[in-house]
Length: 327
Ligand SMILES: NC(=O)c1ccc[n+]([C@@H]2O[C@H](COP(=O)([O-])OP(=O)(O)OC[C@H]3O[C@@H](n4cnc5c(N)ncnc54)[C@H](OP(=O)(O)O)[C@@H]3O)[C@@H](O)[C@H]2O)c1
Image (cartoon, rainbow, N blue to C red; front, side):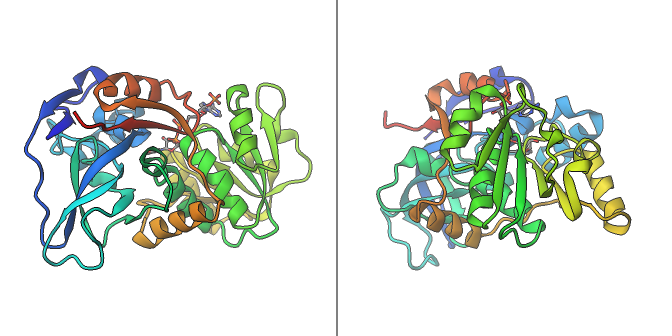
C-alpha cells in the first residue's frame, strides 16, 4: 500500500511516499481503508521530536516515539474510511461499514490502510457525512471534551475560549455550547467569521479588543492554543472557577499548586484519557447538528509535506485534511 513515512526526526522534508506492506488485522482488529486523514499538531510535534519545545520535552518525546529514530514510521492519528476486513473476534461491524476515529499515539493513519482494535476510538460515521469531514472530527473534540469536563457542570456558566480558531478551539466552542455554557470566543481577525458560524455567543478579535478588560468574569477560561497564561487571565476567573490548559509544563506545576491553595484552579491533566464512548458522543453531536468539524484546507496525501508546513504556520482555521484517493 501507499503510505507517508519518515525515518528520522526533522522538518516536513523528511516525509516521503513509499510502498509498504499492508497491515494485517489481529483477531480483534478492523482493517480500515483510509479515505481521509488529517495533519495535526501531534503529527508535527512528533515528527520533529518536539525540538521546538526544549531539550527536556524533546527527550520525553523520543522516549515515547523512539530514541534515535521513530519506531512508528507512519504518522497520522485521525481516519475516516471503510472497513476492508476484520479479525475473527470482531462482532457487529460488517465489512464495508463507514467508520471514523482516532489512533492517538499508535498513529498509522497517513496510509491507504490502517488497523484499529474494535474496542478502540472508532465509531460508525453519521449517515450522509463525507469522509473528509469525519476524518477531522476527533482530534479537537476529544481534547475539548477532556478539558471541559475537568471544569465540572457548565450549564448556564460563562466560558471563555482563547485560541477559538484552532482545531481544539473550534471544537471547544461547540462542545461548551452543547454543555449549556454561554461562550465568549477569542481569536485573530482571520478566524472571526468561522468562529461566529459555529455558534459562539460573542467573538472578540484580540487585535482589536483586550479580552481581559471584561468586567463580568468567567467560570472557566480555556486556553485552547497554549498561548495564554493563568497569571494573565486570573482576574477574569470567578472565585471557584477554573483555568483549563492544553499545553505547557508550567501548567502542571500550577495545577498541583492551585489544587491546594487559592480559590481558582488550573486544570491540566496528563495523559488525557479518550474513550470509544467519546467518539460515539462526537458522532451523536454531529448527527444532532451540535458539532461540525471546521475544515480549513484539503490536500491530496501526496502533498503531505506542504500540508505539514501549513499546519506549522500555526495559522490554520480548524483542521487540515489529507484526501486518500484511489490510484
Ligand atoms: N492538536 C494536537 O494534536 C495537539 C497535540 C499536542 C498538543 N496540542 C496543543 O493543543 C493546543 C492547540 O492545538 P491545535 O491543534 O488546536 O492548534 P492549531 O489548530 O494549530 O491552532 C491554530 C490557530 O491558533 C491561532 N493562534 C495562533 N497563535 C495564537 C495566539 N497567540 N493567540 C490566539 N490564537 C492564536 C491561529 O489563529 P490566529 O493566528 O489568527 O490567532 C490559528 O487559528 C496547542 O497548545 C498544542 O500544542 C495539540
